[in-house]
Length: 89
Image 1 (cartoon, helix red, strand yellow):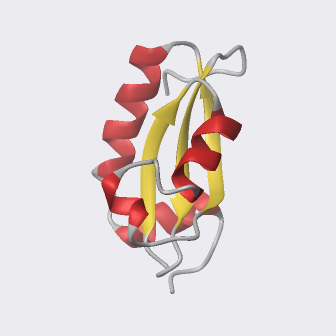
Image 2 (cartoon, rainbow, N blue to C red):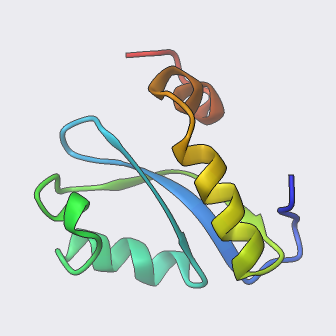
Image 3 (tube, rainbow, N blue to C red):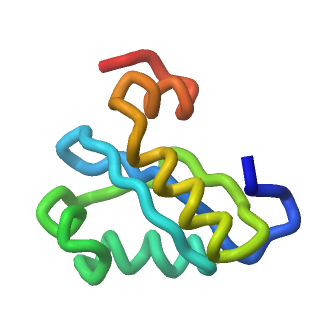
């Protein structure tokens, strides 16, 4: 899609403590993951700790990352799991 290896931005999927998946974008993946696990991330993840990075994809810029995020959020759970390379659970 619009994402490439030359990147400052990432679109990512987190696996939450309750088994659900969360999709987001960031320009600092390590700091964003730490914020989620510290309860300072998205409201969705705050009650589903801990979270673990399941997948990320570098993107050329913020716009490309947000477009990719929107496309991923439209996928159903089995399609997201295929993106992760995992089987549907």
